[in-house]
Image (tube, rainbow, N blue to C red; front, side, top):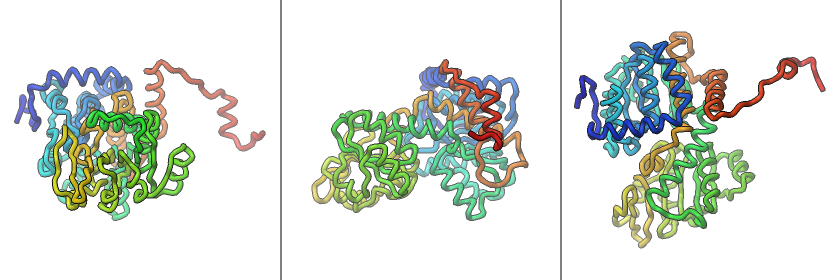
Length: 423
């Protein structure tokens, strides 16, 4: 469909007014991004830039899109996950904010891939990616468009892992900024955002009580730490699964039980995967789970759960309630899968709270500006946003929270910078 020459594919433009109200509500908790949008509106640092953003189409992402529009970007937004789109937000972006959006909650894999290719038809100069699907498709299907690309920014651990693989294979011929590795992103978004929103999704989908349940967290990166911390705070008995020995020790010292997934599979009431890897819960694990075990994923791709293996050992799959399916196994057990194995915090809930996404999307906005300002100067590799930008985002956030902190004294600065001054 089209709306005043804005090309789009959204569910219903009639949802736009509700979407705008929710976008404006989220903005109240996003003061850093609002300040960036105001500066972008006067300076126009992205004027005329062809930009593609592949992201979860939520109220928070909408405020990022508004900032990019204010900067003068010619942007196309597509969904990064079939179940993460908020249809009223997509409609509002088209009708009220003039953004070209291709996103439908529940879209098929074929539709998702079609939208990726529509986005590439825009001939982007900058790509904001979430999982690196757009970049991977560009490299494999549209190599002739690489010369147009100034660079890309990546939101997720999974996407950065793929970018590193591209770099190792000699395929990354443009700069990429690892937004996920900024301290004002992963220390807060991954830990506090994922921690809260994942359990929010589980509870909304099931209405179960977490207190007293044995909850298995597969992966103890920043996301896993957040989920484990919040689950314990709600009374769950938490088991952590890890393949990294350092992270495993950290989980033990944080007070959690640590064991192989093969052992935990027999004990857990609820399983949450947050690894960014493949088949971390496999057929052999489903085979020993208790009747009524609940399984979900909060990593980027649904491949963390081997649902093909689960289907093969099941006689039927019953839709129990929204985003809840029960697989009846041949031996009579019921295994509950939430959100089709996709991101449960976005499938059944609203994703991260706006206040934490404020910092994450401030990183995205400033990363795009950094790429444009340094066009042709950055190596074709993975970069971090400069530390001073990270620190400035934190300072603005503190100011918005009405929190002040000390500055280092001249004496302390001299001490920090001198090797001649000892004890």
